[in-house]
Length: 180
Image (tube, rainbow, N blue to C red; front, side):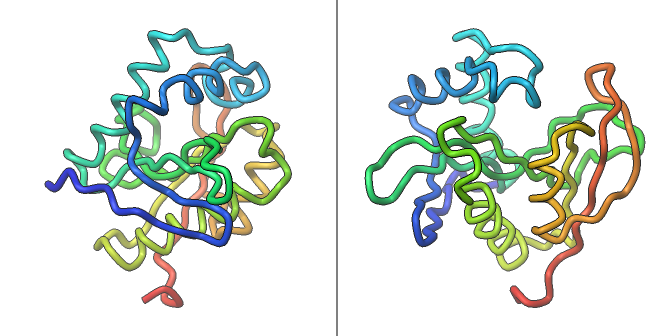
């Protein structure tokens, strides 16, 4: 697999590879209780954030896809992370080998459309630059904003599952023919 991370550009954002320089903003976002509520359930430590940053960067070299840093085009400010993983979560039904879409954005961005804009660009890339016919995402049942976003992006409810000992919703999206 290649370690090249493509750069994607939207109207307001640049999606690019993670670098060591992103760590401070990345860790601050993951330590924010508002962000942690639907991700890890508790603010992340610096150690956990460093491991996650390395994991996100490493996905590209192993899988040929992964997560991007989303930064505000106008200011260069860190917005969050958008992309795909394969985390071997042990879910039922299994999603191993299927790109799992995700978006985690700093709380200052919430409600401003950045997640939608960035995820649309990432999905366009997945549809046109890979052979994957589908992708999935998992969302906490009470995360209304992410459920609305998933539906807007073309994800449909697939099933209930359990993740981190919690009821979790699994959504699926088929490759968009519009992007081909």
